[in-house]
Image 1: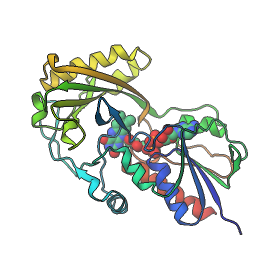
Image 2: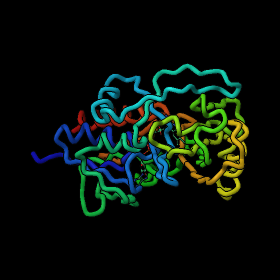
Image 3: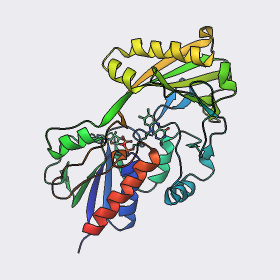
Length: 309
Ligand SMILES: Cc1cc2nc3c(=O)[nH]c(=O)nc-3n(C[C@H](O)[C@H](O)[C@H](O)COP(=O)(O)OP(=O)(O)OC[C@H]3O[C@@H](n4cnc5c(N)ncnc54)[C@H](O)[C@@H]3O)c2cc1C
């Protein structure tokens, strides 16, 4: 019997997690991603000479298998955030180990994908009879957010269970300005416009000497209300909020960059309808909106495929 084959759509944590298990089990595995790099929402941007995580800020390692895999793949590049995260009134939030990759969180996926056949810059527009481009596969695993997966699988009446998130990157002249000297992030759950703001300087090596880089994530109501607006307008609003919250003088401001996450986090759970023969779906939607959870969902899908192969 020949090798079984699998096409994975999406080189985020779920796709890479699944691809690794099935490649190790002897499958011919090809991973396709429409982006130039790996990692999906576990994303890092090289910006103004600094490396900024504009998607997942850090990852947890509560699951022993995930922790072991990440430690083996990242070695000395696996670091832990030391400074506190506080809430909107300045109370320190409990920490259960918040990890990051020294060179950018997208490097986590890259490290885990070592040796896999990953083809980036390839947007899968259609899959017919498990044919992707010129190649035919025994199995298709889509890890693209559900609305995109449903479209590819030809399933209509699509639900969108994700909330968007508008993100802003802000550059200031001067090292660790304002309150960023003593805290890593503020997590505001009160529903105000600014849900998350953090200082990237707390990840050693990411920000050049003499600068402060802040990252902001808008709340779900703000992100939904402003999703289709001109980014130049909402990123300016986020800038003002960041400077107020962190007591950073606007005279130190140098540059900003908006990023729109259309499918950022799960806002409602849903039952996944049955998929065409040979198709599978994985992603954070099957668990929680966390890097670790997406990887575990990929593993789970791989084991389902193995069981049915
Ligand atoms: C702003 C933000 C902040 C977050 N903060 C944290 C955090 O601090 N800690 C944490 O643990 N988690 C955080 N998360 C959640 C975490 O990033 C996600 O849960 C996780 O990365 C999802 O992984 P995934 O593999 O399921 O999906 P994705 O990472 O979305 O991967 C799907 C991939 O599919 C690709 N794709 C889609 N359509 C196609 C197509 N047609 N053809 C080819 N490729 C396609 C995409 O390019 C993408 O790379 C955050 C997410 C966001 C957006």
